Image 1 (cartoon, chains in turn blue, purple):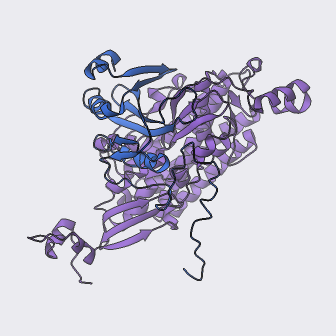
Image 2 (tube, helix red, strand yellow):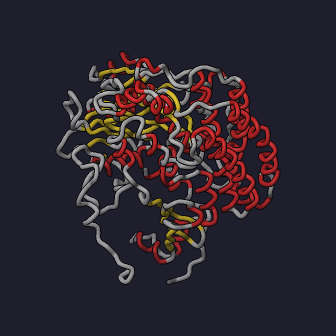
Length: 162
Length: 420
């Protein structure tokens, strides 16, 4: 993907980074949908490999709280591209990519479950790994490793009651 | 409950019960549709996962997977354990082929730290990765056959898995959760006796493979249960992010061993198995063919495995020293101590990286964010099972209840990897 042409198409809002063989494009959250649609329909990135999130709360030199990462692949040219965008508290929100790639279905649900980022337009944005009554988001950096207090509060059902 | 003749098309049945017209009422469905809980404990799920199936007679109208029973916070633990310690956790993701996970994890870490492993280690890891591919496919095919009533194939294949367990145990001292790889190498080097074990295995394997091939491939009962079942089109396979044998069975010829060659795959001669069927039978055929290709790779690699050190040069102090050196020399002990103490050890950049390998199940990738500490700031795993299981709700509607074990088996869902 020619970054200069891509950046021109988006009006110069993109930033590009490279590390080892990874190429990253950083886009403001409000232009994400436009960029992704362009990448899929014009750039030929027909395969969304992964959607994940990083909580940059304690990261050295970070200015934004959450970075959401999309790993794209062009199955014809085998090219890989990582698209990254940042969202912040309160109420971090992003458009869902479900309409472009169905991979986004569960991967976005997982990001919602573990980081609490809302994906608008997702058909079924529910918790996927943690139980529905769970209130925290476990992979956030302000959630403790051992999660004290969480499990004690789970209702205990004895054999006699079940 | 009113009994309504089961129909091929749920929408047509709804018309019978008066759901359409001036007052469309959706809940009318529930009058004749029934819900079945499949799992979390069920012999055909093999592990702990639950399916909520909405059925019209025996025909599936809606299949909703409910996962998370084995969620144990592996990714959170990855932020607490260092690059070498976390390998013990990675092992437990896809426990059917543990070494494939270890290789994928350390492949990513080495890319992050810019460590180039030695040629011997490259070949050794290639052999192990291919053994793990066999390991995984043997169980996958065996379990599909078992679930569909063919017990013999399962036993034939499981006996071959025992031989692989022996090989792995000889190299690492552990049958199952080996924790064999290290940053920059492996725990122990292998010897010629190990190579002979691998040669013996690869000599005997094609015979068993052809026996199972004769048992299953043209077996009327087996073919009837898998052919035309769980069809995934090429477009859907790409759009839903399928990779590995499942994508290749749908005609997506994408293999990271060829596309983004890592380890020694660029030097070795092998073909990529693919099919256009997209059904459970095609997935079975692709896996069967891949096993023969893996044997080809193992044969080439074991004959060409270079001599020399298995771990990268210790001068840079970027890898753990060999155990005998730790136990028998003060320098080794100090070196080990420096590696495992906080604020010593690896020189880690403040960067992030995604790297993936072709695991038996598909693209197994890790996204590591590093903040300069000798442990990951974020250790995301891209688990193939998780992505593949998301297709289940799209594949299943229209098929029969008895097709569920066939599709579940051929997607090769490993719940520990699914939930992490």
